[in-house]
Length: 289
Image (cartoon, rainbow, N blue to C red; front, side, top):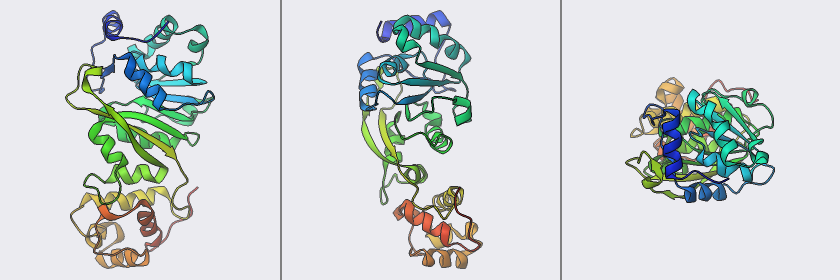
């Protein structure tokens, strides 16, 4: 019983005929100390139900099973999805292995109904770099039971996710994650703990869900404002939101009504201010469901 090290990872991959692919963003963690660190940083309660995206060969899965009540592992690669239960049966205790459910599925399309019971309460994952932000936002939208998480992503993406207004890297991912949760940097991960070794550092992002800033405007409407504001981030909001609002004058009116300077830029606004703009726009929208 135990965790997978570099030798076990390569032997398992060879036995399965698996070669990491850039298309699927596969970089397998082969350092036991790193997966222990991630599992500890996730600060799971014994009753937590984890959803893990992209478990790969199972190194992090094996560290999560002793710490959680259940783990839903969502794997797109059919070979890896099929092999994971056998790997867990080999390296985990029978009681731990019984806590695992493997879903051969695309996490970007997964719903609460797809995962079933028990409902996930925490997201803990080494996310493929190419889909990290969409996966986090999709699961927060689709899984209302999800209360917190810890994800490993490219360091540059981690910085964007946790950035606040005024930061050079503050943008669409920062604001959209802030709609759902408070987030913070939880550490850096060096490239040499992965196989193959990526050419960038990774970062850990911890988040805790909170109530939306407003309930009188739909999320999709707020996100449309965010998208428009950052599509032309060098422009003042009066111009950047013109296409969304139906012209510079309606945009300026909505901004003024929301208490936002029409000459400001999107990078200076909080998620609460974006929500206020969406709520103040002509032809208001019904309360979010």
